[in-house]
Image 1 (tube, rainbow, N blue to C red):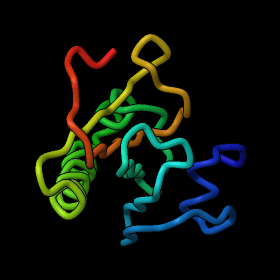
Image 2: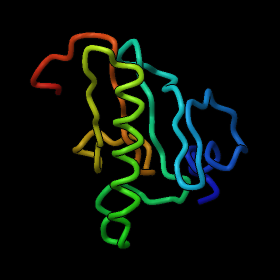
Image 3: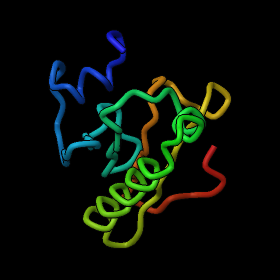
Length: 113
């Protein structure tokens, strides 16, 4: 997608503070952090949301996203972390490219929203 900000970050067209990169995944610091640590884990290939990723047969990539998010959560959340995947407008998704939020560094409350 030519107008997707996460596609531009993944391709290197737009700079971001990268915390991780491999052939399929990029992790960046969120520009509007909701916790002391707020990382976005993004697939380099464009998928609108988690449902679209699964619908396209991307279960293995979804698993890699969660595994990478868990690894980063463990590295940055000594006392725990939260993973969030917003899907669709009512789910709170604001960028139409699937991504996992890794939140850490403070006590998380419930319910979240």
